[in-house]
Image (cartoon, rainbow over all chains, first blue to last red; front, side):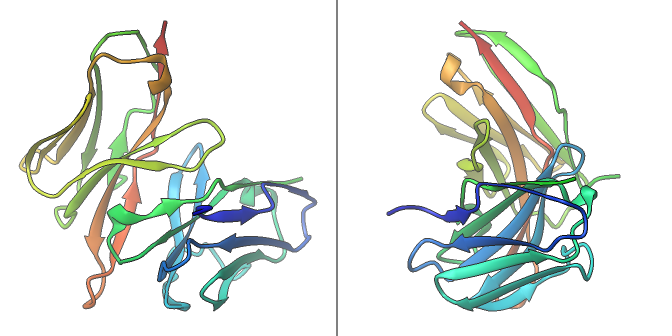
Length: 114
Length: 115
């Protein structure tokens, strides 16, 4: 199995631009999670889906952030407009069950907003 | 106050030493306790998880949970240079009637094992 796939691995953009991060979960996994990691705040859950339906989006920082999962094998996290404080590493994780201890993480997308 | 507190380090120890990594927490609702290892520019990978107070051993790694003190530890015996990484503690609560869990992470401790 290829594991969780994220693209792009690195993204550099200018403030105000739209950013789209992509994730392909492990086949057969019904849960998909988006996290953000910064030095100051550590790893934070932004949103997670179960069978393509958003379950908990309480971690989404503000309306500039949106996430979709149009099918079981693809999800996007969009930031519009982007700001320098959005610079972070964004991770996608997936799991077969709701058990938090069964999540597998992707390699992450390192986002820099200038 | 953060729900999960973890000393960010950095922590440097010589090869072969015993490493002790610790986290404290404030939320009594946490049910599962986990340790993740994260190599530079990689995603976190699960090392161990426990549910109850006490010790759980897996090879050179031992996870310890003390719910009465709200304190968890990870011990690494016979540490190797390949153990150099950031170690994240994590804890989960049940957030829905369907049993869905939500993870809360510590900020991580950066560990370097010196050959």
